[in-house]
Length: 366
View 1 (cartoon, rainbow, N blue to C red):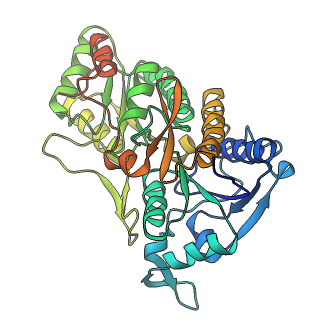
View 2: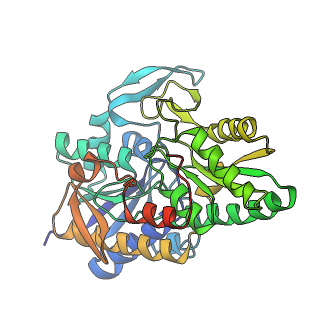
C-alpha cells in the first residue's frame, strides 16, 4: 500500500452528469478512510498548467451528489502538450508545449496522485504525463458517448439515454397527430450507443448509427411499408456521426482546435429532407444537442460515479498508477490507461442489442 497524503483531482473534456458524484466520493473516501487532503484543479488541464487550484473538503462536496456539471469546471481546449498561446487581446496565436508546467504543479502542490476524470482525450493526456514525467495518475472514465474501452459503461451515459428516450416519447405524439416523419439527432460522435439504446427504449422505427452505414432508399422503404400497414407516421433516431454507405460525415463546421477540429451536426436535417423527397411524407427534425449533457444524473449514474470515485482512491493506494478504473460485469477493475484508450468501444453491428432491435422490426437502413 502507498501512503496517500495529498491528491489532486481534475475534470477534463465535456461536462456530463455524475462528475460531482465522483469528486464527492474521492473527497469523502480520502478523508474518512485515509485521512488524506484533496486539491481540486480548476478547468481541467488548464488549472494543472497554470497551478489554479482550490482545497476540497466536506463542506465543498456537501449537497453536490445530484448536481449536474462539475464544481471544478472543465475544458477540452487546454492540452498541456499543445497549449494555446494568446496575445494581449486574448486571441490565440499558436500553441506551445507546457507539459513541464503541469508536472511542476504536481511537484509544487506535493500531490501523491492525480485523479483525472474524463473521456479518451483526457485519459490519453493524463497517461502521457505519467509516461513522460512519472506523474502518478489514476483515470476515471467519463463520457455520455460510452465509447471508452476498459469499462462496460461510463457514467453520464444512462442519463443521456434517459433524456433522449424522453425526447423520442414526446416526438411520438406530435408525429402521430400530424402524420409526419420525425427525425431526432442525438450525440455520440463516432459511437452509436445513445441512438441505439434510446431508439429501442422509445420505440424508434429507424435507428441510424455510425457503425452501420445506411442506404437512404432502404430507410424510405421502411417508411413506405409502415404507411401501407396504416402507420401514417414514423420515428427516426440518428446519431450525429452516422453516414450513408460510401458517404461522408455531415459536419456543422471545422475549427482550429487540435483536440476537436470537427463539429458534427446536421445529419438529422439531411435525413429528414431526403426521406421527404423519397416518400412525399412531411418530415421534421430535432437536434437534441447539449440538453443530453445537462441536469441531474440518474440514480444509476450517481451510483456508478460514486463507485468509480471510491475505487479511484483504492487504486491509488494500491499504487496502480497509469491505470483507469472501469466497470466490467458487476465489478470495478483497474485497466492500464493505454490499453483502455487504444480501441474505442463501439456498437457491434452483429451484437445482441442490434439483433434485438431488428427482431422487433427496427430498420438500420442496410
